[in-house]
Each structure stands twice: as structure tokens, then as C-alpha cells.
Length: 330
Length: 293
Image (cartoon, rainbow over all chains, first blue to last red; front, side, top):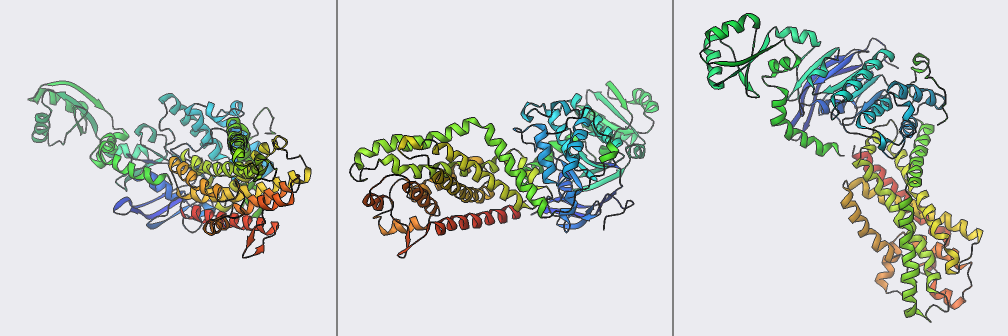
């Protein structure tokens, strides 16, 4: 029985994955609606890649269930695989084949009906702007072109759900933008659900909804706008001659929790425009510089986890990531 | 490769491709495309084609010529190079096929293996494709060595050439399967290279490829009979010896029949043993790849 249209594209209930003592995913629940672009946001090692690997049937969960396109990821692996497209974080192209040969290979492995292969290939290559270069070997492609080719390949068999694991990692900002342009175009042209992971805060804004993950759990889930609104505070950054003293004074005088990030004292406060003039008038420690920012997803992350993504990555992330790197090789 | 239309077709017209359930036809498509990729990769690799020729030439013309001063008289008038020729064909196939299997470690290193393993197709189909690819590449490489036949007084006889080609295919299949079993386990290219050398040398020395199997000590005789390569080397030599002029006494000494407990194993049975070994190894490789995701 094919799943009905109204059924969620992805359903996850109580999903867990343990590697010995290490808990990579510690119980997550969520649904993704058909046609939605859903983003997983979080630092390296937060459990994003593990979750996506379970959804793609690459690894089995320790506990919990997950359905993709209406099929169970453990008991109906073949059905799941036929209905998903995958673009991995690490390249999976054959560099010695041409772009076209890579796509042909994929079409045969995925059993795309022979009479449709030519047209479909033309369509996806055209979408990512590689039709002209199809006869060139992939080792002559730039990093951005290779990623675009992988996206085209992931779409070749018309999957219901396209998984993009860190689609822009390791690319320069200009190429990142162009990849996003293709993803948006894709969303308009194909009836497809996109499930992506990223650890770039600004990229999460491209999603309909995002789930912020940290230490194997979903900390918060919602539209980027709703998440930002839920904070309701602006972020203030001050440079002082005595950061530690400033933190103590902010706490004592205004009941504000501040922390030092990148050599500046950072805190969140409602109505920062009114607060800052007061701060200048009353503060004992001289303030050398001040900046205000409306809440961004970075602040959402900071608010819900008490730390910034880059701080998390500097510590625990590395350990987890190396543990994964060893497993992902297989 | 046939699409030449200038503008892309409208998206709505073909957006609805739904990949069908996997069946036999799908598996065969997968086997074919994996095989085809091996062919494309082989045809691009000119250096590999040439380097793979160096070793057999060294064995035949350098080692064969050098040793013939020692063996003069023992070969009953037959040149040692002619004697070695079928053995050298086997070596060319052995090394090329093993190298083909190593490419799967390479594929893993560069991520392409992942693209193959996540596809909605049975692992078995991918491994069979890989094995057929390795066999074909090895047999083609063997044919390049085969082209040197007249240089060692072996004539171009169509029947002989066809027989040799078929036998090389069978040997190539078994050796690639053996390599795949190793590649399933060994994830690092360096370790794989070392392991390959370690396995290839005994297989080569204990197959009768470089010396006749007559009058061997018992322990060595046992090892020779365990080695599946032996059952491919003897048919190769038999095919060559049927088309060269050699005295019956020399033939008996240089190309003794392969026996098992006094039973002379027919050539077809020998080839069946190689096929069986290949199938078992391939089955083992598929099981290994099925286990490890």
C-alpha cells in the first residue's frame, strides 16, 4: 500500500542511538510534513548526522521508531531507500567518470525506467547548471560543482524526501549561496520534502521549520520566526576593561546573566535601546564599545542551550566527531 | 549519452518517476552497470595496462632466459620460456584480478562505495558486478600477454586462444572473489596492499606456474592440491601443450597430469573446482558486505 498524501513525510518517535556508553541520540520525537523544508541545527556531535543516518537506513536505532515516506526504516529498508535521495557530507562521486556517467550509474542502480533516464538526467543537470559540463570528468569540477552534481544525482530517481547532510560544508560563501539558490528552485519545481542538517546558523533561516539539537536531544523546534520571537530579547555585547567585574556588576545591579564570548561580555535583555543608555549612566566599569543585535538563531541556540555553537564545537564536539569519523568509514 | 535535445523537458511531465520494486531485472541492471564502470575505469588506465605487462615479461624473458642455463637438458629440448608461458598468463590474471578487487577499498576511501551500498539493490548484485568486472579486466590483461605468444614459439591457434581466454576468465573470477573477501575486512589501502602481496606469493609459487609439478615432495604436493590456482594453471598449460611440438617424454615431465589419490582429474572438473572456489569466495564476500554497512 503506498502511503497517503496526508501522512507525514518523516515520523520519528523516541529515537535513540547508543555507541557503548556514548549516547549519540537520546530520544527524539518529531514529524516532517510533505513538501516541508526541515532543518536540523546544532554543533558537530549533537546527533544530527546519527539521526539522519538512521532515517536513511544506514544504521539501526538502539530504541524508538522512524518512518520515512510511510515506510519503517528498520523493517522496510528497501522501500525507504527507493523513496529517498541522499547527499552526504563527504563526497561520494567517482571522480574518474564524467558527470553524465555518474548519473547513469545511479539511474541503473536505482532502477529508473530506461525510457525516462535521458530526459530526467537532462532535467536535473539543467537545474544545477551542469548540463554543459556533463561530458567532463568529475575530477575537473570545482568543489561547488561537485556538490551540485551530488544534489542532481540525489534527485535523479525522483525521491519523496531528499536528505542533505551539511550540503554546504567546506564551500566558500559565494558557492554556499548558489547551492541555496538551487535548493530553493528545487523546492519550487519538485514536489519534494527536504530534510537537511547544518551547523551554520544563517542557513537555518532557509527552512520552514528547524529543530535545534544539542547533546543528542531536540532542545526546541519551530519556525525560525517563532523561535526568534520566543526569545523576545535583544543581544547586547560590551567591551570593557574588566570583563569579570562587569559580569558581577550586571548580575548584582540588573539581575542579568552575562558571559564572555570572544573577549566581549554578552547578555540578553528586553528593550535594549532603552537599557543601554541606562547602562552607560549607571555602570561603574568603563565601557569601551557596545553593540546591539536583534535575536538571531544564534541567540535562540544560546538561549536554549546556554552556550554558542562555536563554544560547543570547541569542546565536546571534537571528541564525538572523531568517534563518528571512525564509524562512518565502514 | 543519447540525449541531445537543446532544452530540458518540462519538469511536470516526468517528475513522477517512482522507482519500481527490486526484482531480477533490476539486479541484472545493477550487475551490468557495476561491470560497465570497471570497464570504463580500466580503459582509462593506460599506465595500469602497461605496468601489468612488465611483470610477465620479466618472468618470461629475464627469469626464464636466466634460468634456462641451469635447466638446459632437463626440459627435453623445450625452451623454458615456452614452458613458463601458460604460467605467466596465470600470473598476469592473478595480479590484475587481485588489483581489481583492491579498487573496492579505494572506492571506500573516496566514498563511492557508499553510493553503491545505499542504493535499493541487493549487495549481491554489486559484488557480482564487481567480480565479473575484475574477471573481464584480468582476462583482457591476459590477452595482452597472450599476444606475445609467437615470441616464445607458441602459435596463434584460434581454438587455443579461445580456450585460454575462457580459462583466464574463470581464474580471474575466482581471484577477484578472493580479493573481495579480503577487501570486505581490510579497510585500509596500505594494509590491503601488504596483505595482497603476502597472499599472492604463496598462491603463485604453489600453483605450478613457474615449475613442473612432477616429483615434488609430499608436503608441497599437498599444498599445491589445496591451492585453487593450481586447477587453473594446469588447464592453461594443457591448452598450450596441445598446440606446440614437444616430445612425449618431455611433456610427461613438464606437464604431468594432475591427480587426486591416483585419479587423473579431467580438465573440465579442474575448471569446475576453480568456478566452485570462486562462487564460494564470492558468497563469503557478499555475506561480509551484508554484515558491515
